Image 1 (cartoon, rainbow, N blue to C red):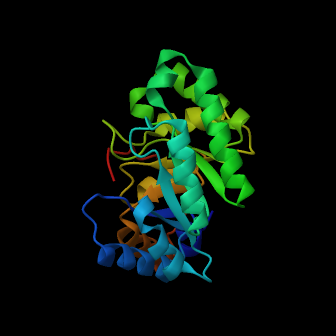
Image 2: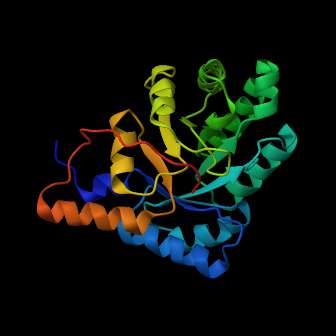
Length: 243
């Protein structure tokens, strides 16, 4: 099946999360997202006002991270962080679940926290993506996290922060897709650095990919579109770690 570059851009959350990025870098990231029409720019919480200014009136959503990157903030802090981001114009929240609590078996804590964040986001007309940080979880824990996230009202489950010991894996995307209903979407992130990897993620059910290599990916998409070779993946390409 043929695709267009617009289809690819619509899958991308352009990531500007590296700790060393300056305001100029964040503004450049917004310009890249606007040029290609990505789904969102996902930036650090302190950068939300810049995104809200630069993306105003465009279809590119303002996205930030909550409890990033370890997920170990107190729930009240995560909720407060989300509330401030939403007040500043954020439209999508990518929260890290409490990995240690999940691994300890405290599913009720994790579910309650996700529900509070989902309710906070939805009250403001925003959506919530839950980052599982799959590199630290067993398959059973990944499945549990998917079930908890859906019950709590999450809009997406997402593989990774990009700052754990490994990033997105094809098998994790398959597992996640199989363990949430069609109401919940899947996002891959961490190690997605080229078009073939985006297409591989798409092929197994991901509707979003967190990437910082947006310009490279879109250049590849436009080249193949011009050649008539931009198509769905036939072979799956594995991901590496990190943004």
